Image 1: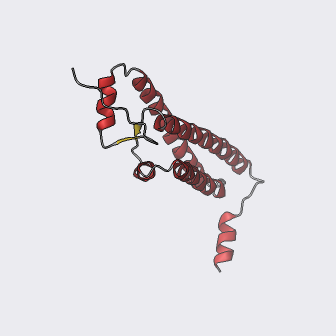
Image 2 (image 1 turned 30 degrees about the vertical axis):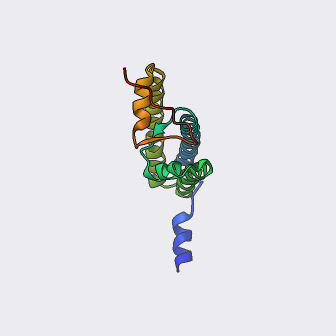
Image 3 (image 1 turned 120 degrees about the vertical axis):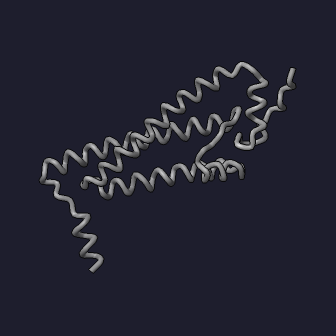
Length: 153
């Protein structure tokens, strides 16, 4: 009974031009999701191996606090693969396309935030400011890269 239900829900009518167009849009959005997620991982990796950063995702922050670069890569890659897999399974349905659009918009906004963040970090010309950030409990790095806090004048 479950098998028949799943077969009827996952059956795709590729003869319909609307369904084919939706599938094409979803595939393009999935490519965008994968590319932006890879960029997010690259910037996160770069920041964690340089001066550090704050991570707002509590699962990723937990992994980083336990100094597991491989764990972070596996977590981020696994979560993207899970998201993309679910979207691809339901790509022919409206819900699948909506999910792809929502995930894409979130990642575009995250990319814009990363751009702003890296610009702000590039403007850190004061070692006092960097030292203050690194003393925060929220500031995370990989390895023993915490600089000694700069002395206050």
